[in-house]
Length: 168
Image (cartoon, rainbow, N blue to C red; front, top):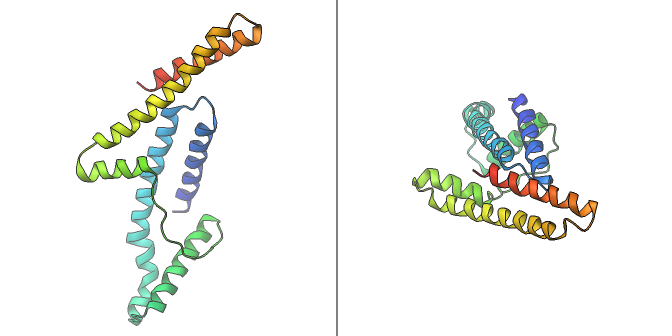
């Protein structure tokens, strides 16, 4: 399970590096995000079926049904988990909500209706395509004014074409 933490950190770094670039590689991001989601699902299943039940055994045997015991168990489990990740324990926190695209993807799997997810992704793709189109169009107007303007035109043209080809 420890190596899964390193794999997760690597996938997160991959997602960050694709988003940090002005010419974001959507396919690379989607591949890294899909791998991370799958890794996380499998990891959480292991935690829920192996890790947490294992650490809960002494509490279950002692049959201490107090809230204090439950809180102590959860803090200990999270503390050990964070230590395994090489991260400090900063207390128990409520789960943070998923981003909109993940929420819609999860809901699509539950409901069997992918339309809301596709609408969201289409809007994001439309926005990204429009952004690069405008940049290329503006650069095209000025391409003959200087060598640097010509280079900006080629750069924006290539990025515009790449975003179109990566989206299909």
